[in-house]
Image 1 (cartoon, helix red, strand yellow):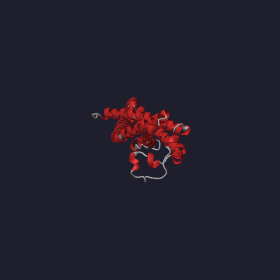
Image 2 (cartoon, rainbow, N blue to C red; image 1 turned 180 degrees about the vertical axis):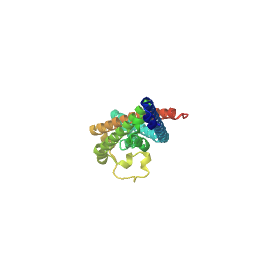
Image 3 (tube, one colour; image 1 turned 45 degrees about the vertical axis):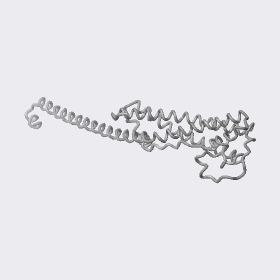
Image 4 (tube, one colour; image 1 turned 45 degrees about the horizontal axis):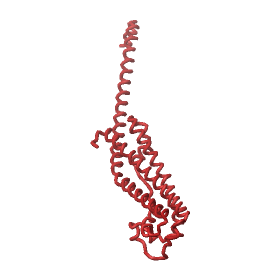
Length: 244
């Protein structure tokens, strides 16, 4: 048709026809791009929702472990505080109680949390594709806290190895003061602990105080992490339209 128009000298109609063809081609390309863009967004949303569902399940399944750890750390806080109160009172009649509470000095539980799906989500760069600002912020904070736990666990381990363990070896018969949950697997006997010399012992006082300080910080961090996890679970519930 364009050739016929040119042969007939109808250049104006020729250009109109050619321009119309270009417009149709451009419209076709734009429609194709729009369809492709829509499809990409649909696939991205499906991928994100799949991750949201798996992360939600992962966070829910960690509830008991986290609660048990917080309760355990709280118990160690109470017992180490009781030990310091007994030493401070200089009451030798409380030695039977001291024998029971000193086991908390030699007990350390690290956090050692493992959230492979959350970590995979972050490592694969999916956070940049999250449109929900609240979920994005909470995931960033959650991931940051997991890294903080690694440093805290190292601090707990270093404290135990460098100060607590050497002190126990030199001054205490561990089989006498171990917590009940561990005593059953130990062999009783050996030299008796001289509990009297722990009173007015500056090294003992400082080691137990520093242990208590670390436990309080660990408990606070875990409670903060628990609140963070609950907020993230609720946000994922809302995003997935799940009932709490």
